[in-house]
Every structure is written in structure tokens, then in C-alpha cells.
Length: 425
Image (tube, rainbow, N blue to C red):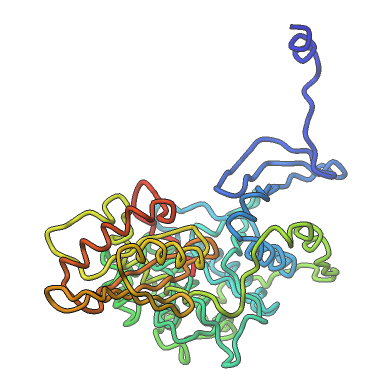
């Protein structure tokens, strides 16, 4: 009673992080919380993203968070950071042009710093109090040092409706050119109020994107149509570049080049300090001996198969393959499957994250042979695929049902299907 009374009479203690006084929570996710805060030295309002370090380490996202912080350190521009509220309906042409000009300014600057966003979409654009556009969420961004020897990026990522054709094809892509395509999709939405590429079938959606199957509505001006067509060119080698966009007549109308001070020192010391004490607590992403990364867009097309509620249930049609997701380390997944298959009498051959399981006893259609492989989707999420390579399909069904009962601690349980709107490779 005494303590409660004292607490009631005491003034509310405001939490601080360094020189910042924390206020209300304005956003919350799985690994982080965003709170409104105030710089006590100049009373400037800011947003502070507070990470749950234990969860970040547990899910092996340290390197991803470190990369995002490094990216934000490299990028300092009046049109970068924060978000853009999803628009309700289309904008007037002059207003859409103004935001598009600011978007191109921001993306051009990022590219000049060797930063490729790779997930430009309406949800990652915000407006500040003065109505200026801000680019946010660099979690999927790539730095220039991630470019391979062929001069291209090879990680398939982004949001399907916004992603460039060459990213889907998974043969390597130029980060700058792919970002420009996404900017074109955004411009179409700002002017039209809807997506240029949309289809319930992911395969049909990819076909539309790869062939640039879109139609500009009648209210688009000739200049806007011409620019969008040049941006949404499925051939990345002939797609319009940012220097060419800056010279486009429609774009140049009312254009004001950005004015900002770039004279600042970049120091990544605090990034190392923030994660320095966790080096022995998290698993670094290895450059070799890792499971094959599953194409994120292939994953979306499989999302009916990722419904774990009915994953191992019999269906009318007898499938020759099945798959499940797991948050266990890949080596542990392979070990657990091996331990579960051996008592069933199967001979096992392993090679890294691939496995062949064969029943030495012949069945109705010869020896049942099951090919298994672990694919990496993200550092803490894997897809395990089991395919019947030989033998009877009914025997395969019976085998994986029996196997599944031994893998309850490996299969990641969830309520529904994996969300296919935002992809990470």
C-alpha cells in the first residue's frame, strides 16, 4: 500500500535513450518497436526504432540489421527516410509529378552512394509534415560491394507487383535499372490509382510483368504515357535511365533540383558497437556450405503447399511431392530427417543439404526412393522439399505421413499460409 501510494503521488518518470526522451509507441513489429521521441538538446521530434536484440540474434538477423543501419548511414537526402501513406484513389497529374520528381531525386542519390533499394513500393514512401516525400525501409537494400563478378546482383527479392522482369528471371540484374522499373510502377499508381500489373495467379502476374502487359487509362496525358512506357520497358538494356528521365519533358515541368548539405562524416563505429557484444551469440551467414536459396517468387507460387495445417493430410489426388517450412538450422533439419528415416529401414545418402532415402525392400513399383533438399528463404526460415524419385506414389504418401510424426519439433507450425505480398530471398 505504501509503495502504491508513493507511486501515485510521484511525477511520471520519462524514459530516455541517450539524449532522446521517449514518448508514445507509434509502430510495432515482430522484432522492433518504433516510438516517438524528442531530442532534449534541441527539442527536435524524431522516431526511434527499438530492436529486441535477443529476437534479432535468435533469428540470425544481425547481419541484415547491420546492413540496414550501414545503408541509412550512407544515405542522407531530403527525400529519404520515413514512409508514404497509401493513397486513396489517384492523384492530380501535377501532384503525382511532384512526388515522382522527389522519388527520382532520392533514388538517384542512393545509386550515387552505391545503394540499391530493391523494394521500392507505395508502402515504403511517406510524407513528412511539410508534404515532402520520404523513402523508407532499406531492409532489402544492397550495397555496391554485394555486386558479383559479372557486375550484377543475384538475390531475388522485392514485392511481386513492383518487381522488374529481370529480377523474376533470376539470371542476375542491375540494381539501379531494377529500381527504376519499380519507380515506374509507383508513378502509374499515383496517376491511375491502381497497379499496372495485377493478377490472382502468380504465374499470370509474372507473364504480364515479363511482357509489360499494361494499358494506361484514358486520363493519362500523352507525356505521362510516354514516360511510363519508357520506364516499364521489359528489356533492362533499353529501359530509360535516370539521366534520361531528368531530361524528359513531362518530368521537367516544374522540376526543382534538391538542395541539401552533403558535407558530413560517415562513421560506422556505433554500428559495430551496437552489435559487437553479440558476435559469439549469433550465427554469421556463411558464404559457402549454405542451403540453396529458394527463389522467393517460386516460394509464392508454392504457397498453397505451405499451408501447414493440412500439410501431411491425405488429399484426393496423390501428390508425388510435399514440403514444409522450418525455423531450425539446416544441419539440424537434415539430421532429424535422417534419424526419423533410419528406423523405417531406409538407406540414406547425404550431400550437404540434399538427401536420398531409399527403401531396400521393393514395393509395387520397385524401390521407393525419396529425394529431399533444404532450401533457404531467410537466415532463420527454410523450406524442406520431399519428392518421390522412384517407386509407388501411395507408398510415398504413407512414408511421409509416418515420417511427419517424428518431425513435430522440426516443422514450423503456423495458423495459415505464408504471406506472399512481401518477399525476401
